[in-house]
Length: 253
Image (cartoon, rainbow, N blue to C red; front, side):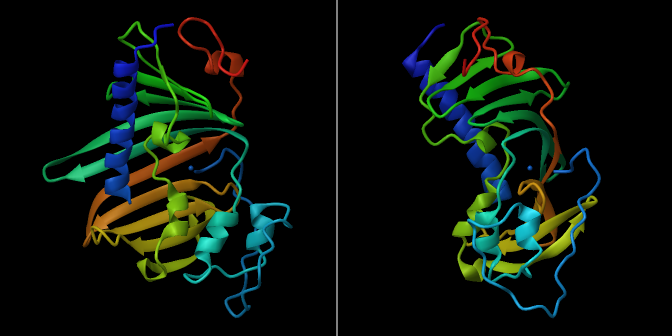
């Protein structure tokens, strides 16, 4: 394994920069199973308090309360993600005269995650494994493996997904609306918010069952400038193969 501090920092910086650019234009998920059965609250039902330490699932919690712009931050902060999953993400940036689409794949098991970014032909462009202690980066064309401390890099950054938990930190006045909706046959919390910096309008769709983003869009006025679609499925691959470095070592073992 080769460790080059200067080039490592550059490689990590490139990942962070790409994630920041996508987040600027944007601010996991349809499962393989049938849509969950959830009895959505009646519109006349009063909101109730949430004990985030005392519910069995996201659906159990959401079934007890009407989502609104006043409580959506609390709901999003209380929702739990699966401990283990696989997702495919497709991000498209729209600009005058064209568009650019980036596809990526992610595997998550506990604190380990792997991101794979694909080129326009579907070939692997870059792979990254992230743990709380280290980030490992390599490309399909380079023979060197770069390592560094993870710093502020998150698993969402690796596949260019907006960190939708930032909804929790929004100013209350930035949230236009929040409600339950069905999106791509998945019951979701829908949040509409306006960026305080750019004035862009952001739409988020968060799976009520999985607690993960399944779609997002950003609009400049009425013009769509960013879209994200995510497909969530079970992690059925061999973890020893997924989290294997180019030299054969398995991260986390």
